[in-house]
Amino acid sequence: MRSAAVVGTGLIGTSVALALNAQGVRVHLRDVDPAAARTAASCGAGVVEPHDGPVDLAVLAVPPALVGSVLADTQAHNLAEHYTDVASVKAGPREDVLSFACRTSHYIGGHPMAGGERSGPLAARADLFEGRTWVLTPTADTSTETLNTALELVALCGATPVVMGAAEHDRAVGLVSHTPHLVASLVAMRLERAEERAVSLAGPGIRDLTRVAGGDPDLWVDILSANASVVADLLEELALDLDDAVVGLRALAATDEAKRGEGRRTVRQLLSRGRTGRGRIAGKRGTPTVRYRTVGVLIGDQPGQLARLFTDADRSGVNIEDVRLEHSAGQLTGLVQLSVDQRSVTVLEEALRANGWRVQ
Image (cartoon, rainbow, N blue to C red; front, side, top):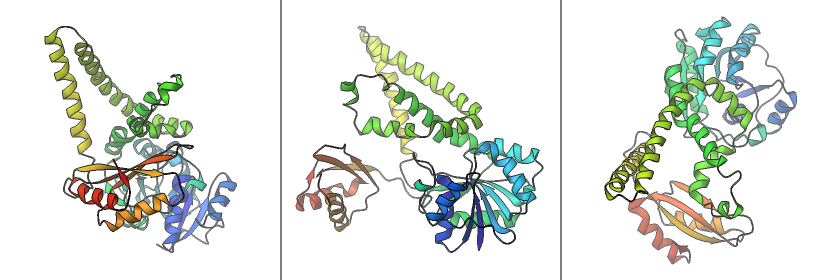
């Protein structure tokens, strides 16, 4: 791939452009808002000048409802040899693509499983897709050359490709992304009118659970609208489980010993199944399951503390799988949570204590 066009310079489109540009691909940027395209160009994502002739690949980074019309327009103007999109749902756009009579042999659906709470070109990163899954959904007649071009795009962005059908994709993202986002928002709603003293007790658990609720509501209305039936079905299933949880908790609060025992079994079963489900996403794809534990380290609110901690952790030889920081403005200390293979916990703790860190 030598040239590409990115249509839509929001977070995802600009991140794609940055990744391709970093790999030596000449990227041409287009957006209905020329200022957004110029902003992306100023960040090093590409150029706003049109390409002389069709580019190798056009990436349509537009809302799901616009994929069909934008694909038809760009194909009519011979923008590229091959086309893909990055919409977060696939079945609806696929129907639109067919209704606009687009050349489906030169098109393949796509969805990089990455994003962020912030939107727009200024939030974009060239490494946004590294190590992430990128779903490709070919049409019935997608050519081998178009598929290979899309696979090259995924490789250049550092992602891992997964090929599946459009309907299968929508059910999957409804389960692992869209429904959890809505549930996080519902939980966060409980905090809207909560007393300040109650909110002040919020710790990393509630922050993790509600993190995605900070997303752009308008963007998520578009996403949920395109996958509404799937998400509604999943929420109905969740509602049945919530009913079971309520029944179990009411039984736990009963005075009758037999009812309390039944409630305990019900609630424990729900928690156990949740733990099992969580375990299915804890490890890396294609590698043996690894159990992780968290090592908590208290740090002071002085410059260079995090850098020194990471340096000492690196010297211990222990691989850090994940890092969480719990710290609020004005606090004198913070808590850094380092997630590591449970077999390495003792080695890391001893190394950090030897360097003067307060390990929890």
